[in-house]
Image (cartoon, rainbow, N blue to C red; front, side, top):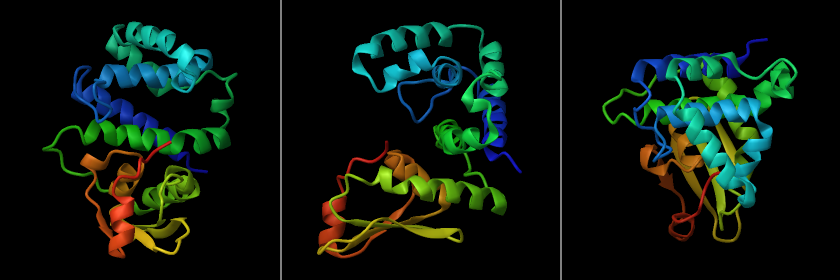
Length: 212
């Protein structure tokens, strides 16, 4: 079985080294070193990672992440590349694919797309299909707050109903696989997508908060 999560993990580590610790990301105000620290914590410190969702723990997470981000950059990226320890559930291939395939794909684009002059990467067809399969399974969660139906179309890859239409109809989000994914994860300003459908549906959809 091809481990696409691992491929993205290693490619992201290569890109981080290439652009350097202080390059911007789409997760503003995070720089690359901050994103690397986030990924290491997610891999190895579930007690701290809980701070992403539990407000009373957020300050501790922020302090620990800042300290880790200030550590040696090459060592930090190597920890991203190495991944979770063997005893972690994340080290199990099936769990790794379910939990990390989209995580690393999106964060890789967070680094690449932060450079406005960078050319979009061209995905191998098998990689695109694998990413679409993972993305499509979780699309409903990303669009749960939409007041209207949502149909996602990744050109040349696939089509997915993220939310069933109501009386107003559905907004259609169309673009490349990468752009549809970035838009769906809340990176709207970096995503080149076309929104179409009935006028009322498009208008209602316009301000929908997206992402997990």
